Length: 397
Length: 148
Image (cartoon, rainbow over all chains, first blue to last red; front, top):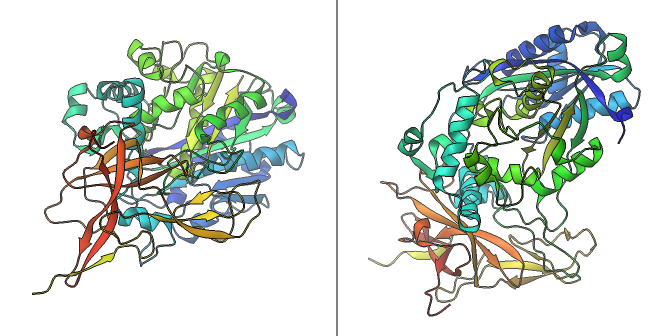
């Protein structure tokens, strides 16, 4: 895909992650106003508002696009709301990009925000054996169990150790230490990691992502519009991949208790994480060797290693070694989660994929302060939703 | 005092044969794709438009894909014993069906006792009990090496 299919990122903004217990609209509004101020675009000039939905905050969350547009003040823009669990933010961005690339508008606002309950995310009540989410909780299989399965498999297949997973947590905690939007700003040590209780073997509490409140927003425009504003050099969205797996999916994914069967003739088992990046690279016309930094979905510290390999930043099974060598630190060959990642943020579901793009934008502008990856030109994100789908976004300048 | 009735925690999901239980899935009669839990409305193979399915018992044995445990008591509808005892969870790959099925591991076996690739077999064990019944579920049990 050529630069004709790129959109400019004019402004980014976030509400700090935390457990603030406020209405999600407040976080979204804060992030949207910050992104608008950062962009120099007047709210009245935005013609499309694309919201990422939250399903835990009642009706306003289901119609997030309209909710944020109302909060900012109705001004006649068109609205959209996208829901794809953790990939909602990327789908909201994709909807806005499509509107701009089709020529239906020049500038759009993308917003996601959430307020989350404490503890395990539990299923709806009642006897509901037709709902795989209910069944897996009946059997005692919570979200961290899936992360544990993936982590343990790495240990037996590639020789990764609990210490390797600990190194990921320590690295991310050091990188996010000074990030003003991060929720957890503490430099953890290996002793801290080992002192935290085992949640899902081989993962401990400090290696599993928490749920957070937070909000993130982007102002994007056509490249022509950016040039007219004198912002032709703004970072651009070069690719958005939201591809599904190809049947049969071999991933044991929340909330299912079994994978697809690949028993039919001509069917091969595939992995959705591995399918996301090739589409993104193809669309951006670049390869993994061009990537300066990556923001990946470390729902567990071990999962960061899977993503590094799925983005083809190293060969399968090599991400543990890369981490031990320091290659994934800021200053290393391929910094991963310079923002601090989910380890420092916790997950604010509809805002998270958007916040990854915010970080890449600050990095590519050279505005990331003590987190700055020197000379960053291309960044890639990886994120996952439910039922084995996710997203990958490439930002370049 | 009479013994409590032993019933399936999920009715119709497995045979109640306590010696050699099997999970009950379905198979597309056109392309052979298997489903667990049962699927009888549409085949998810994109090359197949069949709506005909037959119930099939799944392989009782497979190999360990991975394992973990539940260090904290899961929320409802799981019924946690008091005091809570962590249990292991296994993902087991079935060769004939070419799929991976999750389940608890039998009592007394932890993830440190298991290795990816080892042989596992299906058994029934209590998931929970109330005043009248013991609710059984399928669990994965390591096959002793000599028998594997």
